[in-house]
Image 1 (cartoon, one colour):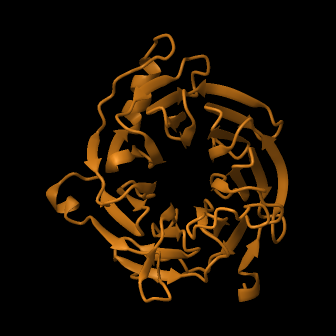
Image 2 (cartoon, one colour; image 1 turned 135 degrees about the horizontal axis):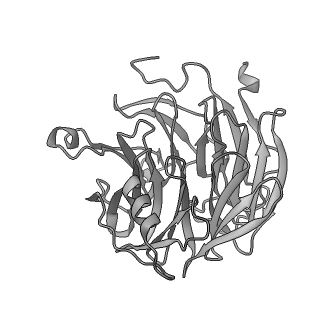
Length: 353
């Protein structure tokens, strides 16, 4: 593929800032996007360059997160209306699965356990056992407000305020939740598999689990990323590290530090992408501790990143993030999604490229 066609802009993007975007499972070319304009958007990125908007799903309030379910015909959304919803992407029917007391920041789906997990600013997780649709979702109290959550095959990582992290075993979480039979709010106390303090000194922006189920990366508002492993042994914990990134040198020679808003792991190679308030996307080899490449700066702050299930496409959401203090800039017309087709070796680790 030539350089001119390697990256295209998605047609008909949301009108307001993007909160999340995800590709469908497997080789699906469907891309789902949530936005502050109160809509969820479904695109087919494989039909033609620039993709095709298949449908919009209107919500009552800004949508903060979205994910696919068992296939690319169902999705789950969460937002400022406090609700967790299932969306039938073919019919457009929306079903409220549970309601939190405050806005719902994140939602993730575990295919291994057919479990949906939502995290809310009311300091709770809701565990939805989708194989038991009539069952009341379980509520797990958290000590602090959750900022980001991520799933691996066996683990759920919850990044919270005050640099706290809880790591749960997803099988145990799903089993205990499925067996709980209380009336709403069906609160159950579950001890995390591990409690950790972030390696980063400032507030966590994003967390993303490695596809090989070995660990996770996290990012902060202060231009840093940390890479850690689940194994609690001393030798494994000695491998964890953090590094500076997404910084620009100002006209006065002083570093301008930007938040690292987004992280996404490549599903095949295990490398990861980071996106910052500086409008830059970089690819990293977390094992070799090296940057693989940095792409040309995007028009605005990077809000979200996602690799396709086969790892051949990287979706980049760019929209005003107000890092430069210009809060009067409207997102409409400046919100864009770019689809980058990756070369065969583009995201490979340094040792394998």
